[in-house]
Length: 271
Image 1: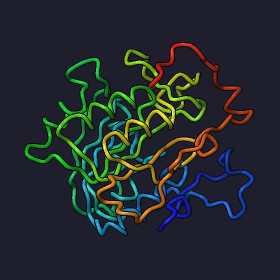
Image 2: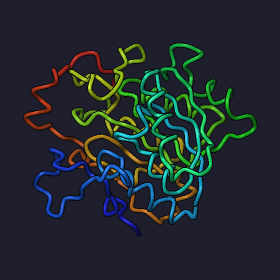
Image 3: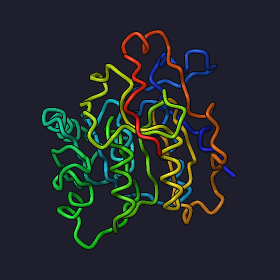
């Protein structure tokens, strides 16, 4: 049984949470783009599943470079898919970054400038997907890192007629209880805009939701992302976080992070 956390690669140099880790892995910004080793985990999953050139849905893609969880799949494995980003300038820069990458031979991308939420019909992920994919309901990878409505958007996706083999979703490392930000919280555009901890959902809340729809938690790229696999495709290949312990996902933060952010304890929705 494979422990996917052993395959994390692409750490940003001197990332605060890994300062004490020996043989720290370093992002070279040409081959690795993820924030906490997600590149390596995803690469290993799709190697084992024998998915050589897949299709993704990337919710909250930023500039498709810094902290991108799909860029390595695109640049080195030829993946294609849909990029969704509310910041028009970021999305435009993302297109330029892809156009300037000579490793990309087949241009198989779609771009959508919008928030993702369950508050408006035109922000629903299921409605957006129906505009781009007719007759195609299963994707190899769904990534959601939108610093706001992750729980509700994921629920919208899973409860509809779309499905994914692997799901990567951003979580809130500062919450140990099973809670989520509400449906009407204020979205935060770009990771630099987060000045408080009132965003996304706890790992336990997202894990509970994912398990309801048959997904297993196989990697925690602490302190930012969770990676789930549809249990149909796991079949005991990858170690599962069961039970999920608080120490697995909770992080108190360091001096730099805590100085930047206000700790908000009210307004969370219990799941």
